[in-house]
Length: 176
Image 1: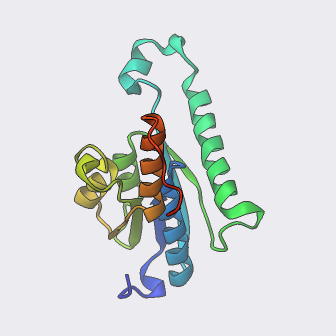
Image 2: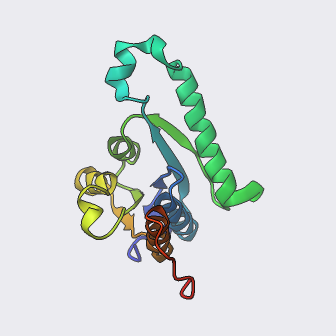
């Protein structure tokens, strides 16, 4: 990213879900937007529970699509408020809620060559084969540069503690 000049990047698009990985990506994207003088576009992608096919088969079974859209917007606003507080990020920001799978929705939003797309890289280790589909999709299909932010070391520690608690194993708190 050091090769970019402030005028070369118009938008920094970042995927936001509220997970620890997306929060790390949002913080990195905010710092990048501030450094480049670009707009920050936090994007929350959503799908109806069970996917679009289930929603088309039985639209009366759940909430109307407008309610899911409203709930997704509230979720994004809540995450942004929690991260930035009332002061905001300190850069021009345009939150976006998109209906669709996260990978394609992020690629469709970051559709300009002068954008930068920031995503959380997902888990590391053996389970990575089943995780990180969003970041892999973005890296494979984006027309702009993609910054994949690795998970926080704290995330692996939290997962380890959670696993040990689930299995009722002792937790060594000396290293925490």
